[in-house]
Length: 216
Image 1 (tube, helix red, strand yellow):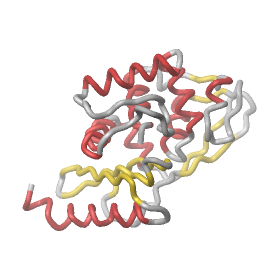
Image 2 (spheres, helix red, strand yellow):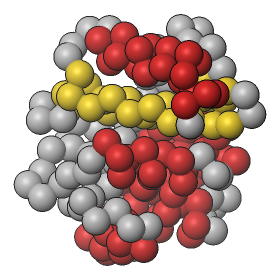
Image 3 (cartoon, one colour):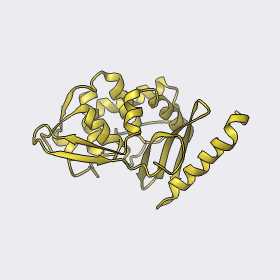
Image 4 (cartoon, rainbow, N blue to C red):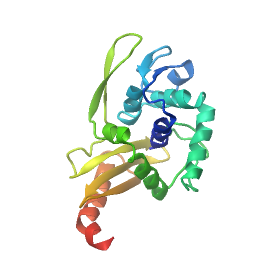
């Protein structure tokens, strides 16, 4: 879910329609995809999909370096943006969301970030995609990246969202849904393994469809 902020800063940077070369540092990102290597070159727009669909950590680092120059400078941008948005209980230490001391947020503030990310058409288009084939401009090889969202087809009016999975955070998911002309956001943090994050999300979605029209 950290990658939502990385995506937002990419949108605001004006660099979405550029090309990005994968650095040694990005390729070495812990728990990377294993599919990006130093010197590989991609459309930055395609890296957005690699970052948000299968949640490639190395793609997130590559985007961070493209936008911020270095990962460290980009993280400073992330925290500045969080402060600008009033996210007082959110702090970032990296662009991908791997566990780190001092890297945290809350369900409320993650919902605020998700709602803000939803305002960008490119992110909405990416969220609504189940898979996309992207091309390595260096090797000319194509690879297909698949969404980690199992909620497709499981609830009605699903507009998209972002998964997150880490040891400390557990299984997480932020989702957006349209109901009676309004968009609602759900956030699940610290869910168990297996299908539990989707079961938890379905409960929140049921609340929307049963109560939102009359209680809000």
